Image (cartoon, rainbow, N blue to C red):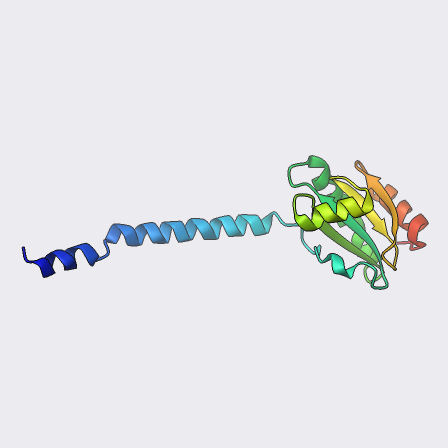
Length: 146
């Protein structure tokens, strides 16, 4: 076997390596789709929206806490009633942005933080909460009824 034959043999990609690339790519797409499906729908994590003229309810989410999922369900059941009047946002406790928000508002994981239209802290609501209790707190804190 000549030297050029050996170089051709070594540099030619095998069919197996091509299949592995497709499998890895497919697994990556499946992982990305699963991650996207686990995100709550319709919640922004853009905390710069706070203090822009609308009251805000911020969920500090802990993806490993059942209370976070329960709070998302509660917010899902009430937020349509406040469309255009109250911002419903979220931040994850395990991100730098989330940790800074927790520190600035003396909050904790799996809690709701209420901020007025100017971005001033109003109160922290600890889990568990019901749709009725959140509506009552929004009404008392912001003067906004469903």
